Length: 187
Ligand code: SF4
Image (tube, rainbow, N blue to C red; front, side, top):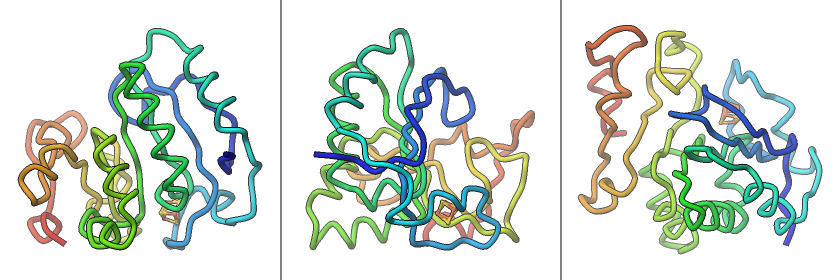
């Protein structure tokens, strides 16, 4: 199986989730958010194809990292590949974060016709969901570009059948006060 990427595996990042992480930049996005900072990842035929087993070997060769982040582009558009990467990474002891332009609620609805989406969610620790909304943009947010996006504890959300946010990431950078508008809690 191949996966379509926009960039080679990024081996070190401290901004795409907590800790020291690898980042998989998936190619392809359909959300067209105005102000998107990564337009080169949109084309479903752009980027390059990579053998998934080769990518897994590269991931395995990187030592002493906390986790791996799937981003792009939208990793949910290559759900089979994302599931393979996420479940492989979990077996290596890495925590898995994933960014998507879909909301958690949309993914749950989509999983009724595509059970792989639920399997993928079950392999993800943290999901940052929703489109980037330029009017909600703030540089003070932790791990998200706009205030409508949510940093979701996926395991707890699946267990409780509702969105459970990661409290420590709701606050603004350098502040202990929560920063999330009530209207964004449940979309
Ligand atoms: S979901 Fe992300 S990559 Fe896709 S258009 Fe929106 S900001 Fe850009």
